[in-house]
Amino acid sequence: MFVAPALDEKELAVRAQIEDLALQLRMHVRSGNRWTGALRRSTLARNVQGSNSIEGILASVDEVGAIAVGEIPATVDQETEKALAGYQLAMTYVLQLAKGDFELDSSLIRSLHFMTTSYDMTKWPGRYRVGPVYVIQEATGDIAHEGAPGERLTELMKSFAAAALPGGDPLIAAAMAHLNFVLIHPFKDGNGRMARIIQSLALARESEMAPVFMGIEEYLGRRTQAYYDVLAKVGQGDYSKADYDSELARLWVRFMLTAHLNQALEIKQRIMSAGKAAQAMETLIEPTGLPERVVQALYSAMFGNTVTRARYMDALDEAGEPVSEQTASRDLGALGKEGLLIAHGDKRGRYYAPSEIVKAASREAGLGYKWRDIDPFEVK
Image (cartoon, rainbow, N blue to C red; front, side, top):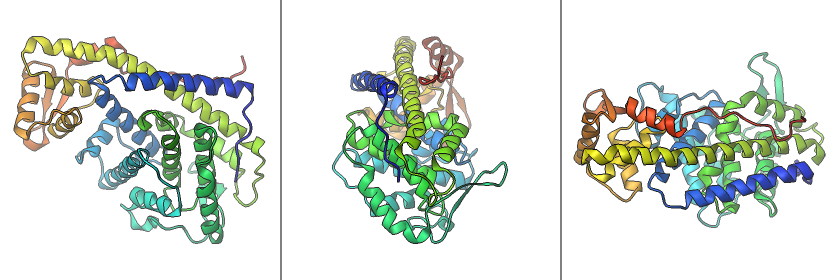
């Protein structure tokens, strides 16, 4: 397995920049703003959507948010819904584990895999594979990588678990755990998703930052080909034949540092814009005479999400303001009458989209714009 190379001067500078951004984000997230819950839910949905899109499990961020509260969007097929729900369950478990002491071992790894893939028993959820496994490049049909031999998996995964969460820099350790897991490829399917879940677990264990805001899945989801390319180059095509000189892993370390830098910068920008947008939402509510709690629906809508009764009630529960189904329906109906939300569908299928007023205020605040990635290692 690979161990991380010592960071060079440029890498240390980027790492320091990431740490500075993490401190800034921590301050913002801990500031107690009423809209932080909406930001957290939106960020988690983006992470889940990004990670699964890499594997061809496709859904919008809004659809992922719906599945998170138990809704089944009509636009998502059953297998996709179950795959996303399983991934969210595993990530929720990771976030809970991060709040206390835990040990990464083979049992925990297999449990997370079961949560992630149990929607399809042909994927052998919770069981290591038997025999070889190949990563196939879809465009050409060529073998991009061959995982470790099946007969070595029990031994290798014990070694992996023991080495995955060492002391030292948690960001680099998490990146190396991701790399080594993918190269071993211990399961019949779901290895990429599992590698990203374990990276999140490793990050969450050692950081004071809210785990949701430390993930890089959103970045990886829009850089899928680059992600595959660097894995293929560092992995050298075959676990058993690869050269594990740590210098060969530097390309991966730089890719991960670039991912973390961009994700942190993007989230910082989103937080700044969300604060302005939230003030705009509160201003829109003031003249209506509606209860102050209804602004939670607009906090969700300002991120471009649709609002349903279930999602609104979930937001209020998180904010410590639970209401009945009847009250939630009445609140959303009132926002519709005020022209702040647009109602669609009937009865139990009813949902509300942000109105043009809400969209315009959100855009004015800076939300909804595509992030332009930067390369801190680009030679200028």
